[in-house]
Image 1 (cartoon, rainbow, N blue to C red):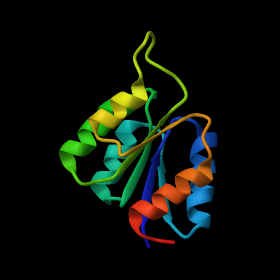
Image 2 (image 1 turned 90 degrees about the vertical axis):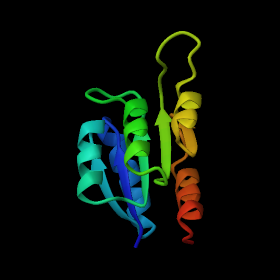
Image 3 (image 1 turned 120 degrees about the vertical axis):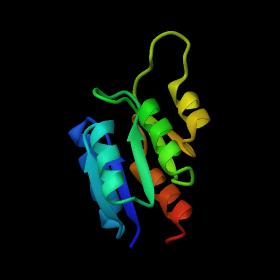
Image 4 (image 1 turned 45 degrees about the vertical axis):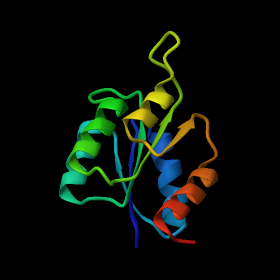
Length: 123
């Protein structure tokens, strides 16, 4: 069973994605912040990480960079409903930092599920 870690400071997003992924047979863990997510990854490496970008404590871009240093081959999906201000495209930055897929909020959770299934080779 593939293990997915969801990192997002919004409870509703964590619950939505957890329900969708676990309903499809994935083992799901959640974290509210990048710091919690890093701790969970150290304790048990997931097969896929889904992280928000704009979060308190340790934001998503910093989390992606740290994850890529720890585990360069770990697939990461990034999502965001905001911006850093100005013309900066944070989802494009997330992709440059190592996210293999990016999703603007609101997103279709079933589209993300299909991408996770394809990435992890499960139907």
